[in-house]
Structures are given as structure tokens and as C-alpha cells.
Image 1 (spheres, protein in one colour):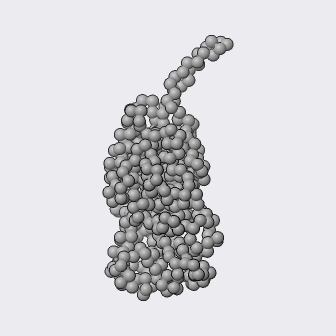
Image 2 (tube, rainbow, N blue to C red):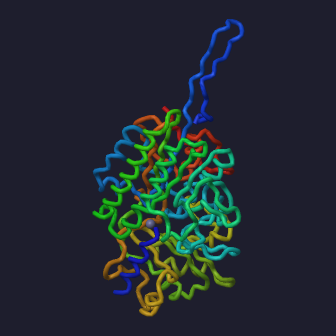
Length: 442
Ligand SMILES: [Zn+2]
């Protein structure tokens, strides 16, 4: 999610069941007959939850061989239609995945938005991972810890809070994204935790990886480098499956693998900075992927702006607050803005604020067309469209304890993952929750 902009700008310059605590065999004397009933021991369950960024089924199809995903499909549950929240981009969906809430309840609207008190939420801002941006709902690790279960969260947003500190028993350091632990390092830590026989081991392990997203932005859905990134995800899955199969006696594990959104190859971009200047729109915009939120200044007319931009209906649609489409689960708080622009595939948006000074010197937001294809380079694929666009759907797999083999799930919503993970752990979901647990058990 983080590096596609660099590529674009380079182009512009040229132009359970309670998994209760281990239940030991208990012998009970049945009073009348004095017979002995033995209850079977139930293993203690750990759930490993993985979030791979930007993983469309088409990327997996193009990247074969992927033997570990194939095995998860044979032996577990799977879907090609994990439907993201709108906009179908990263940070809103990381938060929806971890909380099981729509953005109206967790508060993260997009990768960029404005809050009247906290200011700009921006994916390049080091505070975006701060759980204090949330306006409600509990991440799966918060809900589990509240119920007395130890959790580990590695490289995932929302594991830290400025006011409450670390939100899980184990978390890696709250450092800028560029200084994070490597993918190999967090997989090694997870494997160690699965084999840890001390009383302190976590029962929920959540891991985030930024592949294949940032590679696919530059290389396309079926590009060779995207294929290599997908095969890396397959090797990560293979290591976690092997670690689960070799867990200590009396314990069992489940692996849940999902993504935040899909990916599709794209065409020309919509130059939102140019629109702001061309029509003298007074206010600010927050653009990413395929949508722009407009926050208008006092005195600016939403009707005027909507009418002016209606000339571009072949590229995008503009909605007024109060009339946002039903798939936009934003509520009506101030973060939702005054107008919402949604691009139609294959067009995508770039805001003036995302362009560096030299792009402004070249007059990109003053003289360049509203819609253009960067003459050289640029990005090849992106996401952010209406969740009904099937290429925005992502992969989902569940495998291991509590999961029946070979079951295809036709469709699930991003809000369903949190309650499903909590159900596999034998715990209650967070408070509140919007999704429903999937039925995965044999
Ligand atoms: Zn992305």
C-alpha cells in the first residue's frame, strides 16, 4: 500500500466451541449405578491470523505453483470472494478485519481523511497505526485479552495506543514502517510461540505482511515479480502450517489467511488537484486508490461542486453527503466529508497533495488534463473501487483445528473475519461487532 505512489511520481516527472483451558480427563462417579464416566481431554487451541496486503484470487491463479495454498484448499475452507469494506484499500480494511466493525463504528474511513480534532490521517503519517484513531470497537487481540487470553500482534496496525500503550501481551516495537521487523523475523517469532511450552504462550497470533500489494501495483496482477511475491506468501503459509502440525502435545492450531482487498490492472488517472483548480473548489480533498473525499470550506456549495463535476460522469460519480451509496458504511460523522467521488474502473485518482513540489512546478495540477495516462512508467494495478467490482474481492483460507476439509465459502464480508476468529478461539467477539461468524466446523 505504501510504495505505489513513488512509482507514479517517477512517471509524472517524465511527464470454538470453547477451546477451554486444557481439560484433563476427569473421572466422575455416577451416583446410582456407581459407574465411571470419563470425559475426553480437549486440546488447547491457538489461532494464527495472517493478513496479506492486496491479494486477489487472480494473482494467486497467475503465480502457480503454490502448493501450500492448494493444500489449505483441499484440507480446509476457502473463498475467492472476501468482500472488503469501501473504499477497497488498506487501512480501512485492516481495521475492519481486526475489529469486525464497519467504518461507521471503528472510524477509519480510508488511507487519507480528516478529523476536526486530530487533523489529517495519512498513511505516510507515523501515527496511523495508533489505535487511538479508532472511534469504537475492539481489535480481536483487545477482545481476547479482555477475556484472559494472551495474544501476539506483529507488524499490524492498531497494536499500540498512545494513551493505553501496548494492546497485546506480545507486540513488536512501535516503530516507523521502514524500520519494522522483516517478514522472515516475524514468521520465526510466530513459529517459536507455537512451540513455546511455557505458561506464557499466546493463543492468538496476528501477523501482517505487505506483499503482494506493493509489488502488484508496479508489476500488474499477473506480472512475474507479482508471481514471485505470491510464491513468497505461499512459503510463509507453508512454514506456519508445518509449525502448527508440530505443536506440543495437548495443543492444536488453526490458520486463518485473508487479505484487505483485491487488485486490478488499470488505465488513466484522474487528476484531482487539477479539478480543484479548474473549478475553484474551496476546501480540501483526501484521495487514494479510486475515491476522493471532499471537505468543503464554509460557504462553498456542495450542489455547485457536484454539478460542475457531473461533466465527468464517464470517469467517476460524485455523491453528496446524505446520499452516499449503500455500500459506503461510513455513518454521518465529520470524517465522512461533504462529497464523495468514486472512480469507475479503469480510472483511478491522485490528489494534488500527493504530488511533490516538482510536479506542481511542472503545472500538473494547473495545466495538465483532468484525465491522462502518465507517458512513461506509472503504476499498472490498483484497488479502491466499489466492493461490487469483483476484482476487489480477496482470498480467504482457514485450515486446521475446527475447520472441515474442502468447503468453499461462496462469499464473506470483511466484518465476518473477527467474529470467526473469536469463535474458533471459543471467545466472545469484541464489543460491538457488525459481522457474523462463519460456520467452519466439521
Ligand atoms: Zn495497495
